[in-house]
Image (cartoon, rainbow, N blue to C red; front, side, top):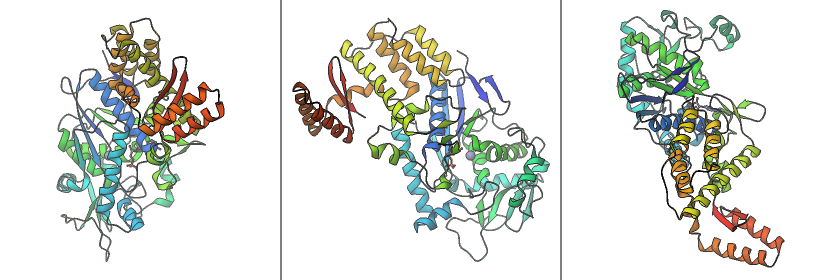
Length: 464
Ligand code: AMP
Ligand code: ZN
């Protein structure tokens, strides 16, 4: 079945066709590891995971590369301010290397909790410095660079089509941003390829280069590493919506200037997770929510967040609220209960995947990842008259894309002894119509990470 994806480059939904038959090269911009990922960042990584799973679900082989930005991302997007890693190091009294290692691991843990599949290739900016230097040398030889006091810059006026991704009106932009202007830059949009270490100060991360000791600008890493690891398979490049105007625009300019060829065919961007009032959740605000504090430490299954993101289309902003989490928790529990009941009815047996419902589901996911409608298609199947065995097979098939661990819903049947004790006590309280004690025990069980649901068939208990 055809896959249609919204391409930010053309601002249209387009039929997706890989450059090589049946094989897709996918590059997703990874985290800047100076702090925990917040759940906004994680929304983008879930969207990218869904994209990857959908491509595989369609029978394509995906080669997925994700970078780790561990140097060069400055606090101001247009190469102003401080390196976020060095700033993080100062905040915590550690080296930038230690900060990077710690938050990279934390991010990988988040991915595991959210069932985000690991890329085929992880690559760190700091492991690929020679490749970045090589690319800058090519740009220098071709006359795209110039030197200022603080670094080597890319001259964006020499690259026609600089705004082909962002569609920005640069004059209007420049007017509005006067305060940020670096007087040595020839054009407001010029960006650093290589920055010099500040005089008289030793950075934790710095390297020799033909231009002097320093470190690469942020954008060059993604150009160098995507070309190194994907070669000519430059199919899809993703990130959050904030990457359109600067990071991805600059990646395209420097890559196409260096090679003379089009860079990626498809550019896809996930909309923001906002906090109440429409404000973007940002790491620099320091009051952001993490998966650990918001879900795991509250004994809420982190897959609840994955489920929550399916309620909005990835190109629409999503607002975070306690109510949205509650609704997602109810929705996920409902789905888990449906699967649990089916497994009880069939004695754990699975039939065959229903072709008609698979097609319906496929139609929705292949329509630019329409997850809200895909979830509705899943419900339609679960409520249909096909056999329970076939429902089991079909819902497990859909879970290849959903990634909600639906095959594991029965694992919680083996309850830990202390939970079993409380469950039994609650059953006794209910038999004695002691509703107050029953409610109290339900809350205690919940605080221990288990949900109790009363149904016609009796009490059901499962892990959050
Ligand atoms: P960073 O760690 O800042 O490099 O960002 C990692 C990813 O999260 C990038 O793809 C960003 O575009 C994305 N991102 C940043 N803030 C948000 C947000 N509030 N909602 C969704 N995605 C975001
Ligand atoms: Zn990137």
